[in-house]
Image (cartoon, rainbow, N blue to C red; front, top):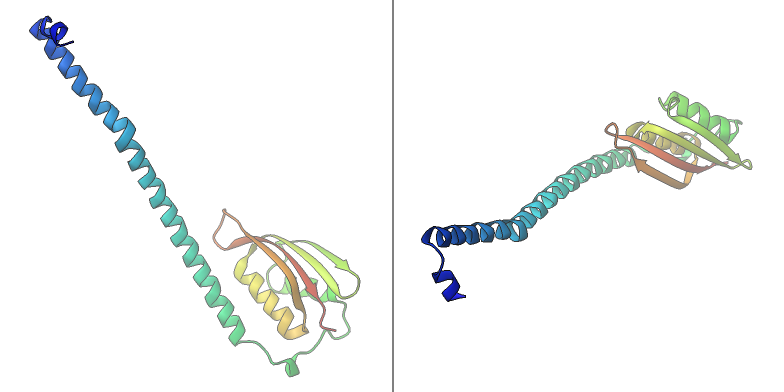
Length: 165
């Protein structure tokens, strides 16, 4: 190999050395530098997304804490005043600015109601649930909330409520 290299013209040797150095640099970039920098960029993006999620969760926790502090004692609850759970839930949702997001209300017997919302404002939904609990004694038996990517604070939700009697 050395004899072959020595037998080449000086211009050919220089071109071969230059090509080898250039190939080495391209391989170092392609196999080492580029994958590490792409991974670092993906990790930075993930950190930013996690920070945004943390901020959203902190705001939701503050709202929940505020709702807990403003609860009405059980002795002051008015009950449903002879209305069905279905009517109370529907009226309260429309009163609390959730009418447009309310997609379906399904009764199950006389004491359980399932409610579906699409693109509801999370804060309004929390206020609505607090109002149902504090004013009418309605309790949440299950809830499923999915954050919507469109607008901030917009959620799809499925809520199962049980009447306070």
